[in-house]
Length: 82
Image (tube, rainbow, N blue to C red; front, side, top):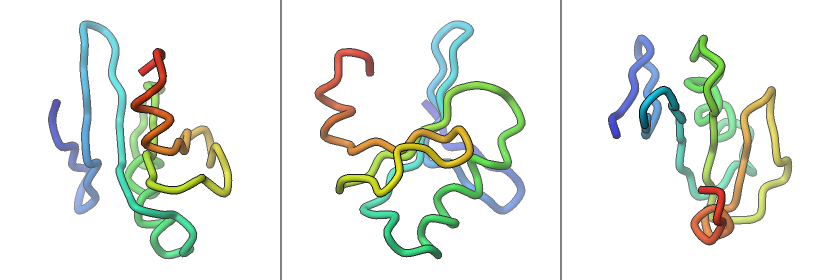
């Protein structure tokens, strides 16, 4: 587990396990457009094809933005796929 940096942008968590990697942003909400852009921008700059995920504390308006999954953090924690 590490924090990822892309220039001045930061990804909250980068988790690696063998040949797998996942990039994770965590935020309370993405209702506000400026917050949504702030959270998505670092993940959009990552140039590989590993999973990119935003965990939020409320029900997402959309479940995906440009291939980046958006999931309620409680649902994600309770999922057997996590």
